[in-house]
Amino acid sequence: MHKVVWDMDPGIDDALALILALKSPEVQVLGITTVAGNAPVEMTSANARCILEFLNEGGIPVAMGAANPLNHPLEDALSYHGPDGLGNCGLPLPLTPLYPVKAWDFLARLVLDAPGELTLVATGPLTNVAYAFELHAELPELLAGLVLMGGAYDLTPYGKGNRTPFAEFNIWQDPEAAHAVFNSGANIFAVGLDVSMDPAACLNSQHLEQIRTGRTPAAHLAAQLVEYEVKYHGCCRMHDPLALATLLDASLLDFTSARVEIVTGNDWDRGVTRILAADSSQLIHVASAVDGPRFLKLFLSHILEE
Ligand code: RIB
Ligand code: CA
Image 1 (cartoon, rainbow, N blue to C red):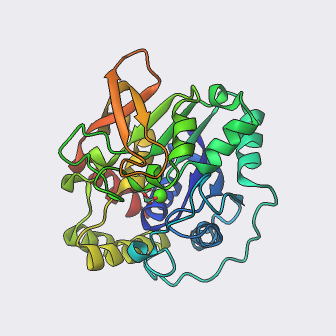
Image 2 (tube, protein in one colour):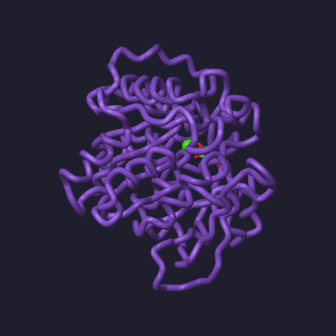
């Protein structure tokens, strides 16, 4: 059982990853924090809570975090995820109030209360995580691990940028935060576009038909989210579910340990994640391969479970 605290920017694929986690006995989500990224932070915070309520998990606390990256104005991705950030799935607005603590303080409180026990999952820009590590320098070493979706490491033909030709969205959005987190000493498992953009790891219209056979609220919501991406983008990229899946079955991905450079600032190379040297002594484990069909089989079996 992995006890998880999760920083996210829902977003369609964050939502699919959360549905997967809530349908997985291998993972217990203790708390969620939200960050601006795919959508403004008020929207990602509402989206996290309405997903939880729809799946009858409204007891999981959600604490709101940063409205902007550390050094840059927010540039959201609503043009990709839809005006509501969730593929216009039409979920009712949340009734549950936000947990009355800032995200970075909430993350710190959970980890300090359970040193060495919690895995931090981060599937959005790393602004909240950087704040938490800045305020509580002991935090990185107190994590069981940090699994993040972010980066494009040129380890496969798919490891190119998606926000620019060179940089992945989460890292590009807040490169200064990413730089701080990657150099924090935390034991990081970085799942990047190298594996998540592999067509074998993306849902297509045939997979959508399978999901549509599901009769649970989880399957119904997943079908709406996947349908939007298949309709407007041709397939459903599973960036965040793939990061979460490392906790469900570590054999789905191969990782290489390396020193990683993050380019900060706002030039053409903003947010570039560059492997400097494969070095087994390093704490950055970068996903280098994925068993796409087996990952999708795991996702579908969990989502369709009654
Ligand atoms: O580049 C893909 C990542 O950026 C995903 O986490 C997606 O949800 C967006 O946050
Ligand atoms: Ca995300």
